[in-house]
Length: 260
Image (tube, rainbow, N blue to C red; front, side, top):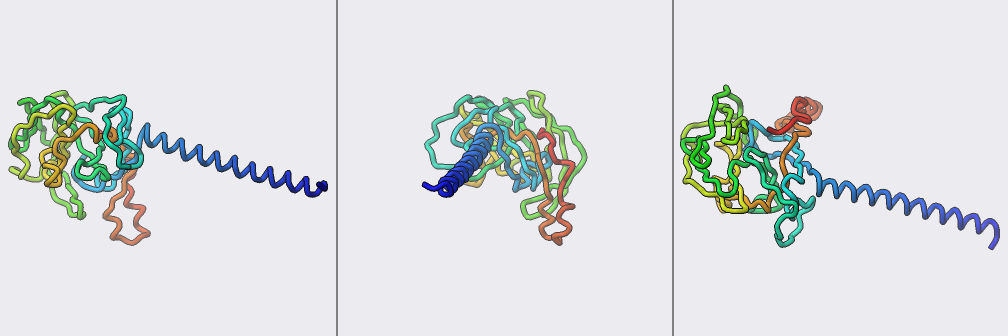
């Protein structure tokens, strides 16, 4: 082989090796992101007003996965696998805001607040939450505006609700004697949770059966993670405005704030 051909072969081999190294680096980065998304935390988007005033339509959430362990629901991509339980399983606390796979369609991720654990007796009486026959206290906190999924705004009374374990958070009530303000007492079975939306008159939660579009009693195997932070937020109402005004729709005050 001539010197010229030998040099050309060496250059080709070096170039090929460089491409392989870059491909391996890219694959390693993708794998690291996939593992982090699957094992640590995953972003989710809030499409409805059922958790107002805690979460707003257009909020981007970060759901931390390790507090409740891992199962098929916490995989970063949804594939049809048989449910085999969870590893490193942890039970949510009352008051935790959780992201979960909706029992009616596991491709959908929903977010609600846990108020009932296995063995708890849960009931709504005239709009007030009772846990094991003990009322969650309600303290009036002025008024606010509740936005529905169509962008319409309705005045709402704001309350600070305190659960029997001492966890406090804000809720909205838009009317008295709503259709979900009085419910039968339900005992949460093992392996399940009772969840509510903070916007009590606009939330299809454990008060509503899955067949009617609600959550029903939520299997813990459906948990994705705990909603710990709002990492970004944009007012979706800006979509109807000129494009050059869209930047004003970013709710900068909500960026990187904790979920309570």
